[in-house]
Length: 157
Image (cartoon, rainbow, N blue to C red; front, side, top):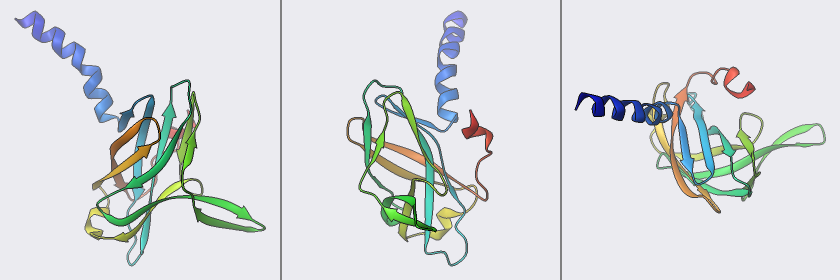
């Protein structure tokens, strides 16, 4: 009995470790480190960020996002127009095969518009965000709200 309990614990340890690492699986896709900055006072919107890893041999496409903490969640990107950096909405974002797509400040990001409960966007809180992919389907992630961006070493590797 003790042997089987230890074996079961050893087998489940990687599952619990992965669950604690803020990684979420959807088909061949892995969504890592979803986060958002703490909502500044009087800010009408806030953005959410994450990294999508595609271990598959075929590309996928992020078609949309939704969350109960805002009336609307939109996919956005920053683009240079002349000498100005401009933010614009996009209808979808390609996720390359055997590659990754990073949602980060001054790049692709999710804009949350019409915020419903500002208290959920305070440091240390979490909120759900559902991502809908063309092939992998839907995956719900928990976005970690932080005062400052996660450490740069998370994305440098």
